[in-house]
Length: 194
Image (cartoon, rainbow, N blue to C red; front, side):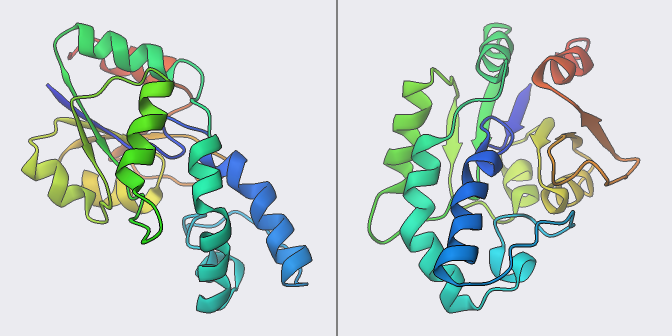
């Protein structure tokens, strides 16, 4: 089987890493109120979710993007579960919306982080904004992501979709998307079919 897995907030704790940077930037650099309420809007769309201008969002990413993706840590049991799935002969496709940056090589930074954290995979796909299209191209059977938008998109293509719960998506309900609280729960849900 081919298993598609997102990186940020699926394998890693990106939101927890980003939040202090974002709060500091909004409060101290911009002098605005920081409002972090539940929302269907992905946390990384900070212009839309937190009411910033395009210029303010661009400046935030310019200053903090690399710091954030270099300093995230894997979620508990993510690395071990991926290894267990690969040991059973299945392929792991890491499909991430991490975007290219003209100042640095995001692929190289991501590959370095994956290696440093012993995350095994068969293919890394960066800058993936249409994960359904990629899932179909790569013949992905099961997909794990944290993004409501991505999970809706992928499940609409009749691909078995799991949503790992985060502080940003726990309120969401959709019968086609199975929620999991942890990597252990994800593995328990798929072990009969892999």
